Length: 93
Image 1 (cartoon, rainbow, N blue to C red):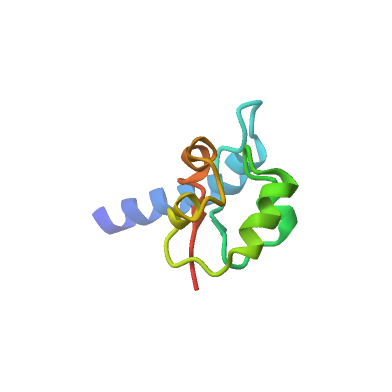
Image 2: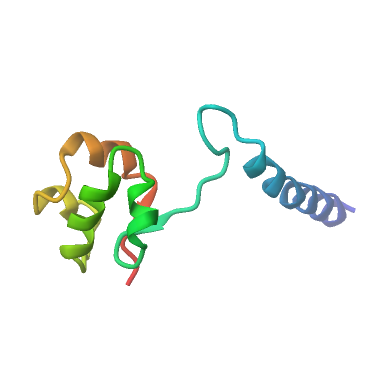
């Protein structure tokens, strides 16, 4: 009985995830996908808060990155921009 309850709850939560992503308010999406700075397109990078097309080009030119904090260490991004996106990016390889 306990497993059945957990399964029903998990399925209910999964069914709500797409709806939560679609019902984003002015503050942005309720569910954000992570952006891989090593493979993301220029367009996807430019959509990150504070990045824009110029910084997106710098990110692409500096690839590959082993750690996301290299964006600041290599003077690709200012610390303030990095602080705003660090929870939204990864460096998958």
